[in-house]
Image (spheres, rainbow, N blue to C red):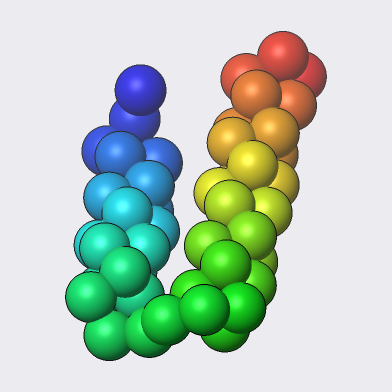
Length: 52
């Protein structure tokens, strides 16, 4: 795993943890889904770059 990917994924994790402690209800869930989608997209882009 390269350094930029690790930093990016750690940033998403920190934001998710902050959302857990500061938000509640549907907005927390929406934030987690949003962050998860960004993390997935980031990971897929990195996989695609490694293949080609």
